[in-house]
Amino acid sequence: MSAAHLHLAVALDGAGWHPAAWRDPAAAPKDLFTAAYWAALVAEAEHGLLDFVTIEDSLGPQTTHLDGPDGRTDQVRGRFDAVLVASRVAPLTRRIGLVPTAVVTHTEPFHLASAVSTLDYVSAGRAGWRVQVSGRRTEAAHFGRRDIPELRPEHIGAAEPPPVFRELFDEAADAVEVVRRLWDSWEDDAEIRDVATGRFIDRDRLHYIDFEGAHFSVRGPSIVPRPPQGQPLVTALAHSRLPYEFAARSADVVYVTPHDAEQARAVVAEVRGLGAETLKIFADLVVFVGEDARNRRARLDELDGAAYTSDAAIFTGTPGELADLLLDWRRAGLDGFRLRPAVLPTDLSAITRGLVPELQRRDAFRRAYRASTLRGHLGLPRPASRYVGSRR
Image (cartoon, rainbow, N blue to C red; front, side, top):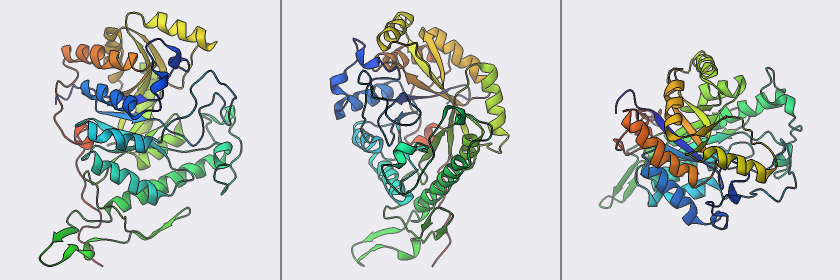
């Protein structure tokens, strides 16, 4: 692959990222809770040769409030478990990476390690994980094991967030470390499967991880053999210093949300300044793509009763205009982009059948998959287990 080629991913969420997307004539709201709907979306993304898809998830229903339900009935509420969706569509695809969201807060890392390892096997080495932290008091109430203060507007992007949020990110970093150690706890050749001698595994190649931290005490080993990629991709969304620090410490890919090229350059410099030399930095963009994009956006805003806003920049225009923007922003040092289709499947198809050919004409995007694993798509090597050479 040319060094000039962009990396592209799409973020899938319900009927699309605009809250009124389900009311668009091209949407399929009756199909949202079917496996076929998600399989078709991922197949379309693979048709466009995209690096990977992410699938949104949370521990509570969607809401317009920072914390707690909003009582609205005119927007999509409810979603499938993202890891299970990814596992369902994995056998129906061949090359595209699958990166479900899984909330680390309130969830045991042992379970997460097993789930993502299994996805890596089911997909033959195409699994990733978007780590998400839950700072919502209402979501903590589902579990009853801890009390989290109410999330307020002034907490978002604050230079010095409340101590509880730093604790949540420290816990998330410990959880990722536990998961990574569990992925390594079986050496690659631990499975012997020798019928003649009756030995299925070499027990000396399974390792206790013996993690002892402020939040977890996990002995290991994993119940799932080492994943095909060795270490499935770990990704995270970050808007400010604290999550940047988490991503630099724990992730392989970070999604950032600059609103112009100058801000993108500043964000890249800040993240790289944290010692994250090998971290892949993707910018998130919500996209309305097509000749009718502006009219579609205006119509959806009218249906929703408000102009759409987002944490990420919002693009509205043609595939050629979007290609111009991506190539301009790339000069800020970005490795790629995670595009959030405003309406599904309309804006996803506009990406795969409009944007991708435009980038290909400019020799800025691949014309075929060159690798079979997600790490391979991003040019990341398969790491050796940290326990190789260690024997009990």
